[in-house]
Image (cartoon, rainbow, N blue to C red; front, side):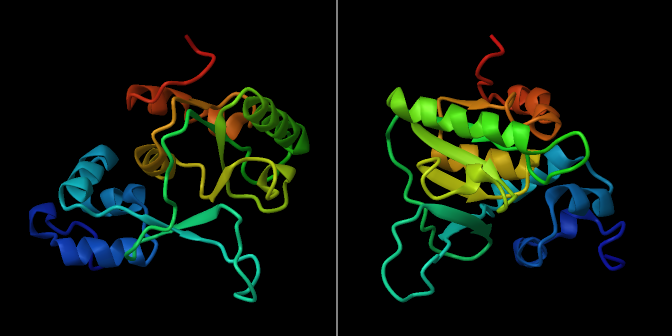
Length: 192
């Protein structure tokens, strides 16, 4: 971080930025250290074609093929997500349980996913809390174990191209993203 603090952004190479992303630095943190806006850094990163890929979680420890569609992001090669052309809706889960935000929001997300599947939509759940029902293998068609941040959600939106995103069932964490997602052109279901 010290070496990056105040580093001239025009001298930042693709290799340097890729290494930072591989080490787990968010666009928010990198932009803070470079003294530029997060949106500027994201534009630079996309211009350098640096995007995460999604790897499948092997829930069977390679004993046999695992059909589960659990994914996590990494800055490696070869995306394993294989998006479909189906009608898709993304649901943002509640993230970590905290005082005033717990399983009641997870319950809402689960029922949203089940109802949307029943209505013929492919459902995509984004949540970072593995201790919730919304992250069970049979709740949504696809599950992304990702932080509920603008950067992470937008990368999944870019990959999956859902018809819209539901934020209102996950509590305050996804609700805090609604305005920024809408400003980025993401249709927020239930806000029109």
